[in-house]
Amino acid sequence: MIGLLIKDLFALKKQWRVLSVITIIYFVFSVASENLGMFSTVSIMYAVILPVTAMAYDEQCRWDKYALSMPLSRSKIVLSKYLLGILLNLGVCILVCLANLVFVYFWDYDLKDVMATAVGISGAGLVILAVMLPILYQFGVEKARLIMVIIFLAPSLLIIMLPNFELTPSPELLSMLPYVLPLLIVGMLLLSIFVSIRIYQRKEF
Image (cartoon, rainbow, N blue to C red):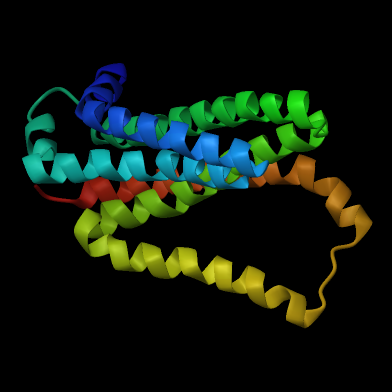
């Protein structure tokens, strides 16, 4: 499975250069505006986009058909994409944490708050990964694009509409979130992996 991960990293080699330049530009903008939100949001999008790009390359090259002719199990092929996404999310979390230290040092931001934001952003990336990969395996990258747009627009609209319903979480609920959310994210990932493997096992190439 490590070999599959290395294959994806090499396939994305050109993307790394472009994204590195974009990352630096957004970091400069964030520092100039004293707002790390822009940099954090763009960073998490990289962690989401790159696994999709790797799957798109595989589809274009019909790599899956070739891979299945080798002694590779379908479950390992699926798990390699999850491993790629998880490692990218971890990398984004570290990157945002380091960027946050700049804001803590120069603008007296609260260290606890900014680190919690970095971890939260990484968690959001893992949730997106858990929702996205089964859809990609079921429909393919091209067909799944519209479905993913609809799925990810729905939570955004919900967040915008929530203030109209005047729903305020209780302090007890908010205090439980740091303990409950990691378990929910892990549960979502495990369920997502199970579903993706089942879908991939039924596919013919």
